[in-house]
Length: 135
Image 1 (cartoon, rainbow, N blue to C red):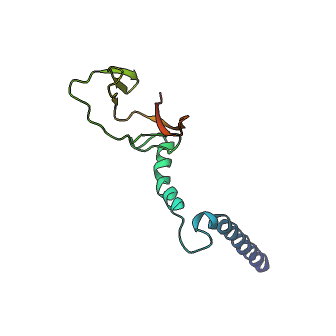
Image 2 (spheres, rainbow, N blue to C red):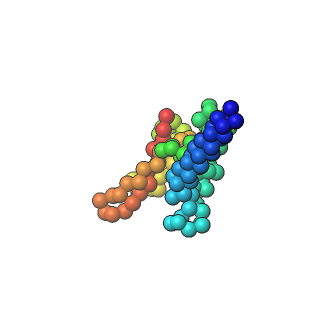
Image 3 (cartoon, rainbow, N blue to C red):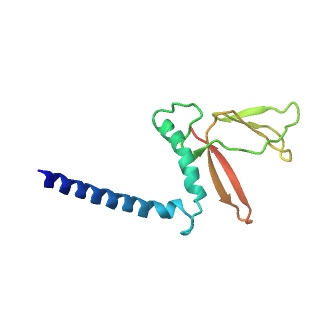
């Protein structure tokens, strides 16, 4: 009986060493930068976002918890429109100013509106970000 326990213990130790070696072998390239002791900043950022992603997956326990998927809350540069600017509804949560051909247009986005961000290259070579409301 004593020999069976010892053999079982050795097998358990061997399996745990093999398991830990395989885990470290697969995590090392993601955890460290180019085989140096420097931590990969992307891995750290992913680790920091993990609790938020888990809460969002479990049913959006925190209101501000969101998955970093193709949906993001856009950070659009602010511009101060002239007084008396009239807005017309454009989409749910988005309103656009009405104006003549040569006037500047302003867009008002309500807080909490989810937008999909697309980067488009125009024929002139300019790159433009386009924010498309989702839902």
